[in-house]
Length: 157
Image (cartoon, rainbow, N blue to C red; front, side):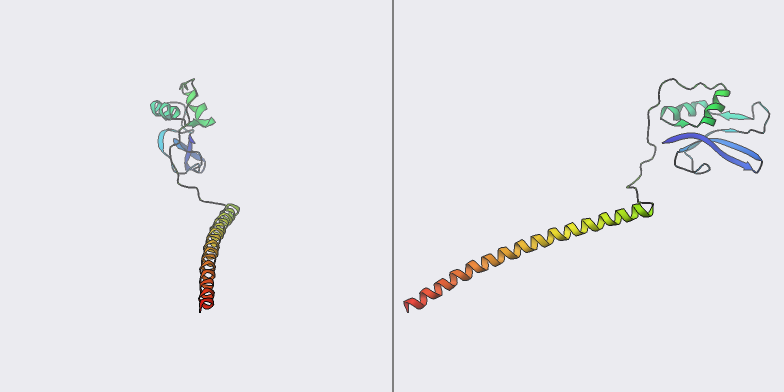
């Protein structure tokens, strides 16, 4: 899910925030998709306190980005009006097969792999046994016919 939220910059006791579009799972100060504005809480009210690109905010909102409570309040205070219609949810980034991250997930995945290997081995063993029994049956049938012919040959002699 994509969110519009504040990303903190500045130093201790001198905060400065960028308004950024980013993945919800990323850290507060992590990688962002786009910077769409900034907010400086230490500047007296005026032009330098809050600046944002309203077109880009609407663009991301229409793509399904959810604004954080702080961003929603800041932009509403600046006169920005959010559209009334519900946004559609859009995934921005496709990920490959998710790798197990916790120890229990890794153990579960390992157990599933072992079960699959065991099942394949059992199927192969069954197939080999069936082939071997069919070969024995064919050999017994051939030996039985050969023994009967040998007995007939002795009786005629």
